[in-house]
Length: 144
Image (cartoon, rainbow, N blue to C red):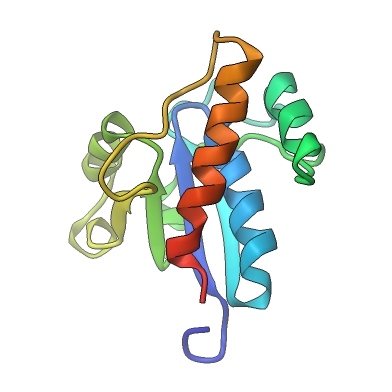
């Protein structure tokens, strides 16, 4: 905890439909009271809509509940809110840099630090399972 409050982590993917909602739920659950995680997307296409049905199903098999998720687009307010902003891939990181100022830009990084979390959109169930595993494994570096 930072200054008596949970560390605020914002996870960001393209549409806030698959990867970033899962990452936020994983970080929230595994981090307990030490992490408060939210998610958003660069695009507004899925704003207000639920997570991808395959991701909801695959996540549930690992004990993560995405049923309440509703997509949100990244905003200046969310960037200000976060202590750390984690992009799911390099393309998203570049887009976040374009949206950030000097202060919020210093918060940006990749979720997996040195590689992308592949987008499972349009792929088979195995791709979604692989993403869940990557996100779970990647969460360890943010836990106390």
